[in-house]
Length: 112
Image (cartoon, rainbow, N blue to C red; front, side, top):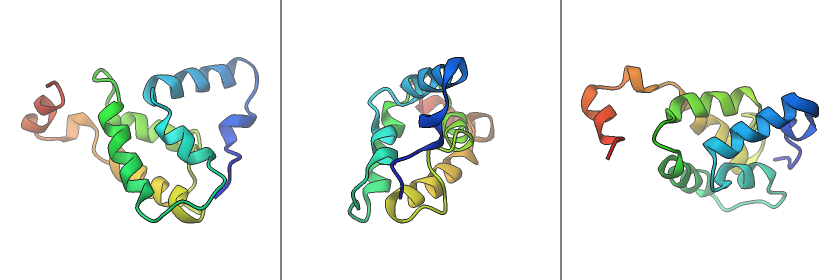
């Protein structure tokens, strides 16, 4: 795992837009903290963080789209060791199921 994520090195307005987007989709900084952690985290931390993050994503944002964008921004890389690499794989799974692919009953449950 590395504490140096690609979005940290982006400067100027593009970097500010990325930081603003991250603040919007990760309001409690759950995933940001995991990505920047420089210590080995206990096994299962990625799953716990993902669940906490999914519950904190604002309702107007599709978690699958947010997960896909986080992967595009290289917040997590699948080749990283430990829990950060595991998080990249979990985010990829979340990104595979945007709201428009889910049954109507599942989409409605997010509105409550």
